[in-house]
Length: 444
Ligand code: NDP
Ligand code: 2IT
Image 1: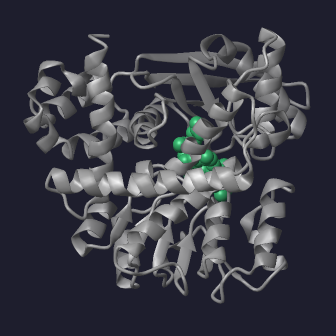
Image 2: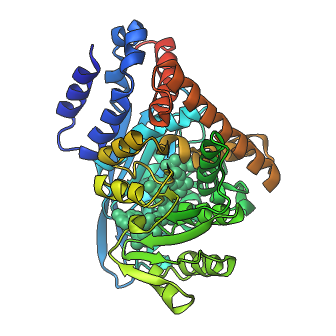
Image 3: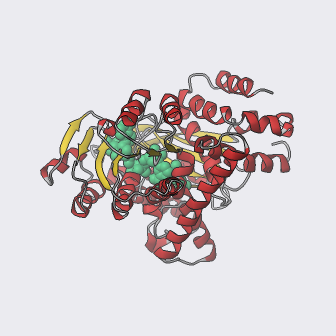
């Protein structure tokens, strides 16, 4: 079995699923030396098996809007791989959601969860429902309808969803309420819960903080740090917000945030007060990033991405393929020394090749943004023992996990001839644990 044959097989079997093809190709290409060294993986057809979800559910989600109109959305849950634990991964509510996007996210999640060292398999789900502009009641009715089907497929030892784009604390609350009503069970079936009813402290912060911790470890290998650095961040949702907070705390100047309308540029760097304004704007008022221009000194660049501004470090925290080859060249020309991915697959293959050719630090998503799901794993652990750990305790564990993921990437990349390439290191380290576990458990 060659890696190229496996890629071709996956592409032919899943026609038109371009995001899924992209994610599989990126991983499989770096597994070439692993497959050579481990003939048992070929014999057991591991590449073929790992690229086929164990189960993928699609369902109808009808709901009534505030005007009494009936709307119908698609619901999905891809239960991709349970070799090392129950399926675990977020739910995305966004108009672009389809099977290809959820399969790319679910596939990445398998290897990401493996890197965390916690016992979690890979899954992802969601809907093409767009929460933007919907009232709280509409979001609630949608979530109730979505969970009215999803509940029969999930469980604390089966599949444990969480948030992703368009799914935050509000949605997790509505989903949990309906799960409980249907099952009469109060159990650890979702993560990202509110602290009052079983959530973990630091889970909201975890993805953004973890991304900055991972980047800090990369910089440290050259005796460098965030202090005094200029940082461009995309997005202004959960991940972007806390990446910005941690970067500011570490003495960096955060000069951009964005949403799907455009980018704000703050040449002097976001202050704590500016950050508080963004938190209120995005999480309470659910407004647009452009509204920052009414509140503090910044420029709004409509329909522009953050990558044209001079920055030492780029933290893409919005969505897939948001840095293409041209954007990457712009970043490099403007002096960027590190990219750490808070979002999933934000860099196109051309962008990744440009980073690697320029030998800048590149922290790939499945390593750099693993802090979110890792802290979900810590939330499950707390639920299982019936305890709530302090902020300090959870943050310490999150930090340790990110430091360890960084070491795993370095060790695996060295061992298989990819020194300096964190992307290959993350793919290899994540894959081997899952592949070996699949072999241990027979053919399924
Ligand atoms: P949120 O919904 O909180 O925020 C998403 C942000 O990205 C918003 O600012 C949104 O702008 C912007 N965005 C989304 N889609 C697009 C698009 N197509 N074009 C331009 N901007 C876009 O989501 P999260 O912060 O939770 O997620 C962001 C990324 O991080 C995703 O890739 C997600 O998969 C990844 N991630 C999230 C984790 C988590 O724990 N939440 C964990 C690990 C990774 P707008 O409001 O205009 O749509
Ligand atoms: O992409 C991701 O890792 C997430 N959206 C978080 C998943 C989780 O289960 O916490």
